Length: 434
Image 1: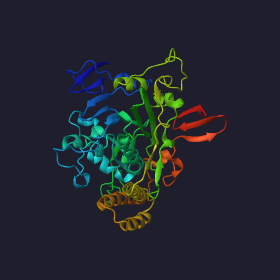
Image 2: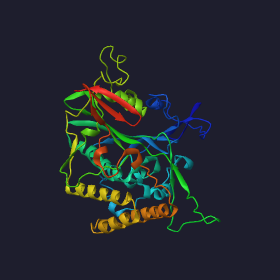
Image 3: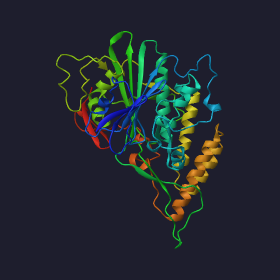
Image 4: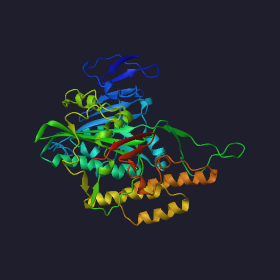
């Protein structure tokens, strides 16, 4: 193994990955951030965009972590530029020219898996990077896109992104930094492609197998939110939000939505480091946050506790409210998000047609998106019914009942002793009641 570099990114070289021999800043050493466990991804590339940084995985074909800054100018267009309104712009997703094509997904990959709930998941949101068209277009590069479940992407995740953006309105906060990341699945998923309603048959008259797209679908998505407070400038305030990459149906009539259920408790930060492979101390230090420890505390922590627990890094759940007011536009957004799910997860063509007729009565703006989903799902259901194959679920089998909010809390709590036991997929931790 050896390290090489190209342009403004670096890759750890292995025989199955391409070799590069160009210059880079020798001080840029990001690989230790992801070296918290033995199974850390060895194919990570660092990309420096205009307003955000990307830690991209060649292995997964999506970013493991994206860093961005929130300030009063976030989401605003430069005065000398024409105002950017996404409603008037066609989303142009494209490959990142800084990455080899074979280590990126394509538009066809996402379009052909749409029927299974896969959507283009921005890590750095387009709506928060509208300084000019160059910056805006960078958010549509596949180096910034993750396969996210459609209801999750347009619902819960959109709310959390809006809440992060609103932090800039709090005049007591500064150095607001957002890290958005993914927890890859242990195995890739083969997703069939259904290009049309007619079925190809082999020479003996039996149904032919459709082509398949091999894709790693993240188990979970997370955000590490950090800032400093003018009244306590020596402290770093941080929360970790984590949620299943699965449907969350949020009541569009809700006035206020609380995110507390998605926060990782302070005493479980070590669990998060083990689960994600991210060393929080090294991540913060890499971005010039000063982490100070109490005497002899840096090495004296439990295996499920983070190395920064006894430091100046504090939770902010008691400093600011972790909730968002659902304005009329956000309530409409939740309603539109739910309807994606009603169409995507119909079990039969009859159920799909019924939902589609109901959806058309909603008269949503950009109804062509729903029309496209309807046609994709119909092709999928038609193939499954004709071939008599067992339906394939990309998201719902992993994370529970697709129409239930029972799984909204990724911290499935069971009260048995004086400890709360929280179980994620493949991982369990416990911590004392606060």
